[in-house]
Length: 88
Image (cartoon, rainbow, N blue to C red):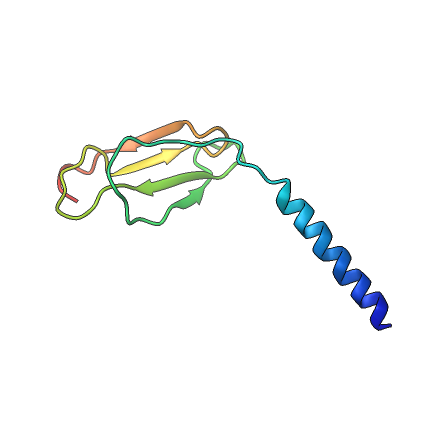
């Protein structure tokens, strides 16, 4: 009985490693802004059943042009930006 559990566990480890090794990023995105201390939030913004990313940008007491950005989860393109009106 123990041998079958060990075999199952080893197969699980092998398949898990193989699945993780096959994951590669499909896109990357650069946002021209300043530093961020915000945690990204994922939600479907454009009804394509793919989670998009919303991120607050900037830091306290620093003038910035953009306060929030939304990135398309399908291809990394910029969906929209929102100005927060000055200092963070």
